[in-house]
Image 1 (cartoon, rainbow, N blue to C red):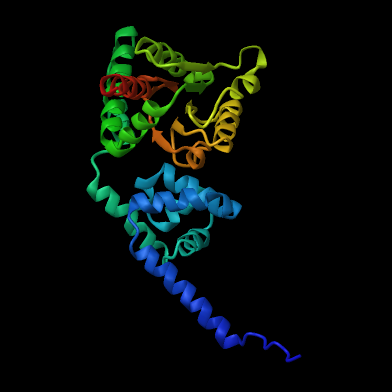
Image 2 (cartoon, rainbow, N blue to C red):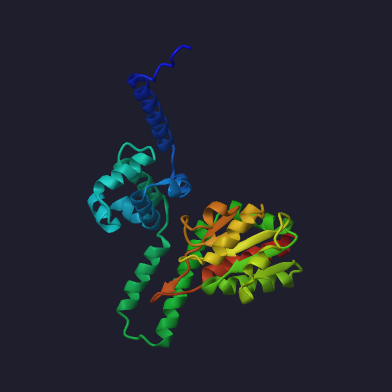
Amino acid sequence: MPRRKKPSKASGQAAARRQAGAMAANAAGLTYASLNREISTRYESLSKRLRQIAEFALKHPNEIAIESIAVIATHAEVQPSALIRFAKAFGFDGFSDLQRIFQQRLRESRPSYTERISAMREEMTGRRDQGPQAILTRFAEANIAALQHLCEETKAADLERAVQILRKAETIHLVAQRRAFPLAAYLYYALSKIGRRAHLIDAIGGMDMEQRQLMSPRDALVAITYADYTPRVVETVAFAAQRKVPVIGITDQPLSPLTPQSDVVFYVEDAAVHDFRSLGASMCLAQALVVALGTTG
């Protein structure tokens, strides 16, 4: 029997060059949105250090765009060499090439929600009145900025797809816990008012597993959770995905555990004042989905 030839060193190097060329071509065509998706998709396969950079990049895109590699490395608590490895992992020749994607986003975007809130805080700092009226004003202004951001960032195609999923569902299951629970309770109330069958997975008495069993592929699940991501909600979404139940996720960032298992996912940045978070933008989204469903049948 003839002996199989081992791949030569030259052929191995050629294969590596072809792979590097393919990655570089892919990187050349990336936009910020597609890079965002690529980072989210590959997040679990990255090393611990590269996952740390991925989290920082998605949470602080403006800093990635405008700061030097040394400053970014300090704030992300990594070595500059790790940032270069991160860029190369996604097909870029160096960190500056990746940085240009973030810079393009900054040139094309309006002031971010975070920037608006920072400006509002600076304005409020000089005010003498710190009483209830001033606090109300701060919450109102923060919510206005959050609502504007919601309108700018939410895609029409995602809204259409979510309403389509809800329209086809025999039963719309709802799950949320802790801070997000009022949204699920409102959706249950509002969906019932427009004649849609709704089921609230509230885990009362610790019976969330029994409540999950009622889901079928003919239904839909609306799941809502924000950092630190309630395990019961994440587990319910995983159960639904396993049963082929369409999932609409409402969460706060692309690295949320809801992202990979949702058919449609909405990222909402609710207003916060002194670390007290509002639900104004999230409630607005929930109301829009219900009203759109009601008016389109």
